[in-house]
Image 1: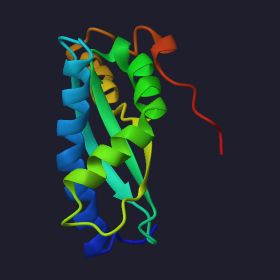
Image 2: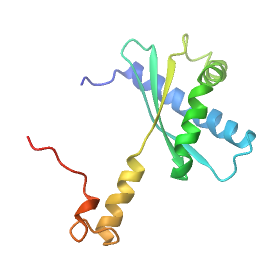
Image 3: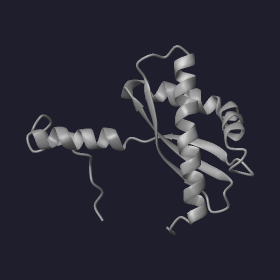
Image 4: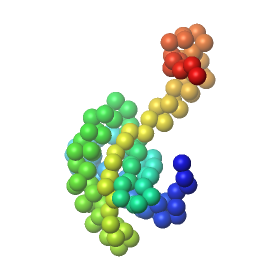
Length: 132
């Protein structure tokens, strides 16, 4: 995998900053209290045509439902973003939304380290590894 160019990084950070405001605002306006949406990273393709947006949603159990709503509203989100970034970006990349489950993964490791979910005592907690 190649290193991201400065331009890709710059566009990613512009989108990341504005997306947080757009998504959190939409959730609040939609009457969704107590939900935190954060944009953990934005990866822009080399040709700058697609932005992959990784979201962390708290609480976790709302993630699937919320990501479906966000995906179905992608055209509206893209329009709102293009209004906000019209002085910084000439063309708005297509937006693809994904759940970033790294926080969940970290939480599992943390519980294992604290001995709450000990994989040595309960081998079923470990994901099955493929033999090479």
